Length: 134
Image 1 (cartoon, rainbow, N blue to C red):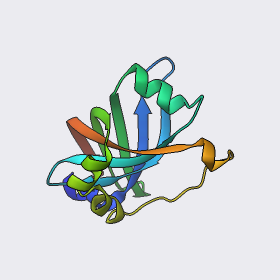
Image 2: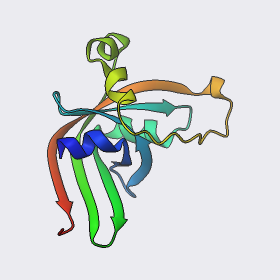
Image 3: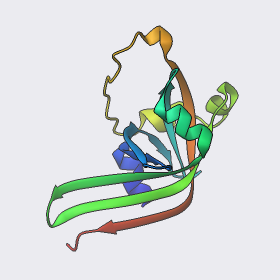
Image 4: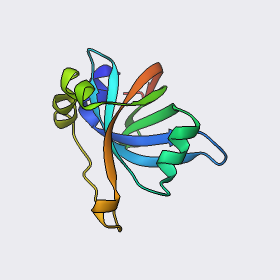
């Protein structure tokens, strides 16, 4: 699972609540620390921010699908925490993030001066994985 998570770089981050809220998200994975790092945006009225304030418990689903008989997935259940600038430096977050295969997507329709970007760590409490029979 460590190799798989390190090779991918994007998945779907799921926030709890009713209804649940899930969004595509790029991440970097540090296999030594077993933690996923994400650079997320927040702004006034942000659903992510509201959900994070309700609960830091999250799930990340990472999938690689090639064809019906060749696929893999890992579900990471854990706790999301905001990182300080010192945490980002001390943990070498940028190294973990830039070494992954990133999905770079520009989703912003608002002025970027209204958006804040912060680093977050998803620390797993449970990992589970599945794959097709080969």
